[in-house]
Length: 323
Image 1 (cartoon, rainbow, N blue to C red):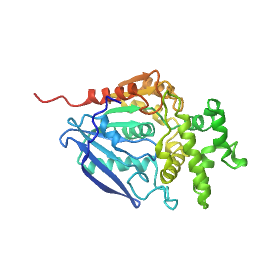
Image 2 (cartoon, rainbow, N blue to C red):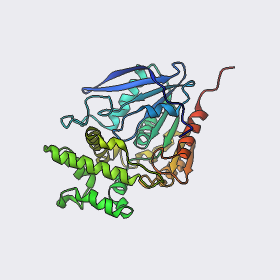
Image 3 (cartoon, helix red, strand yellow):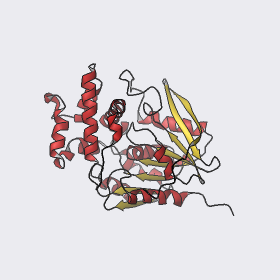
Image 4 (cartoon, rainbow, N blue to C red):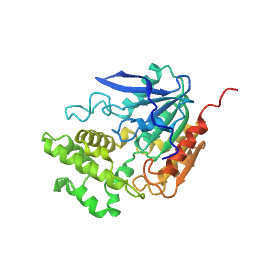
């Protein structure tokens, strides 16, 4: 991906923020300490904010803020530990964490960038705190509604029938006609480590399948790590089974709260796991948003065109040099 800013953008400051409930959130700042603040909201939930995200911003213009959401990455306690309760891991808690981090860093407003699940979180945050957001840059747009969860966990079986049958059949037979995300969540919290491991492996195997619609897709190497698998699967199923802990359809209904906040939404037409109609519907009711549809690419930053569109957005919103 030639358009990315060069590798080697390292944090000049980092720390662990005590956000309450026994949780400590890892954060870091990169780029220009005097630059325009920009917050990264990673996907998953549960992926963590790796170094790749730093390269989506001009480091000479932005003060880039990354953090690992509760329970994942370098934040503690780790959701990979089955003893870690997820009771205080909700969207409301994550929004409160973002505000606490903003205040801790002395930032008044920031650009917010999110991908996939990070889009849901970014929209929820911006609708609750519109005065704290300069702009939104979003890719692989999701709202994490019950309809979207049902689409990924059941309806996608029409596109990948053999792989979906394996995903379904990993669940006990009496539960196969019900909510698969609920069934997996129960298995991931089973007292038997073998049950947890099988559930995590099969969940992540299906995750790799339903994003594999674009040319050149390669399996995510992170799923080879058993701790990452369990952490990721626990957090995804936790948020999905509760439809992101939001009133269903609220993000679309309340999009008017984003009026005055410029935004760019980048979405691949081959993103079948996150159909483009989610972004399109949002664009109809968010007057300050630009929707960029990429014809031959899928979920995430799966190709050069999607990545370049995100980079053009962050470049567009960077501060102009002082002359």
